[in-house]
Length: 216
Image (cartoon, one colour):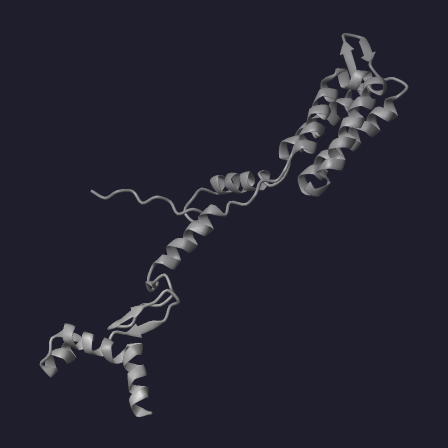
């Protein structure tokens, strides 16, 4: 009984799933919802002054003398919303402009498209001003670097190098020789302690001073 092999990302997936993942990645790097709200706010502001409602043989026109102003405000809001999608560095300017246009649409365009376009544009502009791009995720690369550096790396001591065989490492990182090793002492027929004691006496300052006096 064989288990099903999972689909490899980007290779065996359905194209709709790939498109959805790419769209989500694109949407997360820009104020997408702010631009969408601003666009939705501009459409009713530009539409209602030119809309005609027919009731039987009666035509109800909601156009006013400021119909051209409503069209300009609606088109500007749509352009600002698209700019928020493709030019995210102008988000502050576009957001403030969308808020101002939404306020101007109240007396100019039938109370801002019966308050529908006004509310959408106002909320979208505020979202654009408040949007900030998230910091890139550096936790995974750092963890990968730690894991990659830990495999096969030679172990070192606190001073940066392993102490030499038969010697002692001092605090400054130098290595001092303790004298002949145990194997050398065994070959000479003397115990290791006796060899170290004789070596210490030969290197003591008092013996060196006596040697200099006798030589003089």
